[in-house]
Image (cartoon, rainbow, N blue to C red; front, side, top):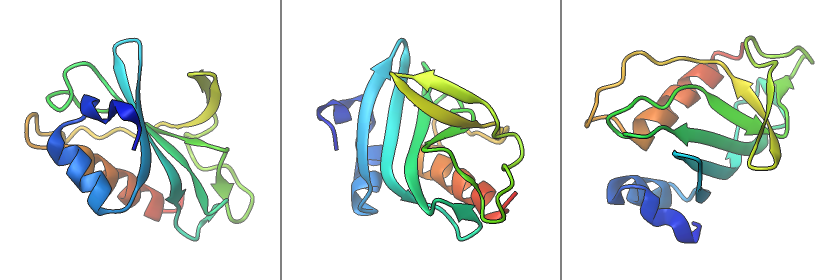
Length: 128
């Protein structure tokens, strides 16, 4: 965990730590950036491990964190590009692959990092 772990709630920090995630928390503008290093991807993807970025908007956890990003770039095991993951963005001096996945079922004040990671994992397991 980075020194800026205080940017997340105690429950988010406890969850990330209990799962053994190696993570960093920084800010970029008004957003909190949570980077989970050595994040394991399902077998449908190459590489099998990457860094995963979640951009937490102002007002989180009452505001839905949209999409997710990976570095290095990820493709399907068959060599194809995952759908809606072609855009590369430079964030904080690194190139990140943007996965345009939208979750419109966010419950303000209830959902958290655990919810977001569950949605990311569910989307990745579709292998598309």
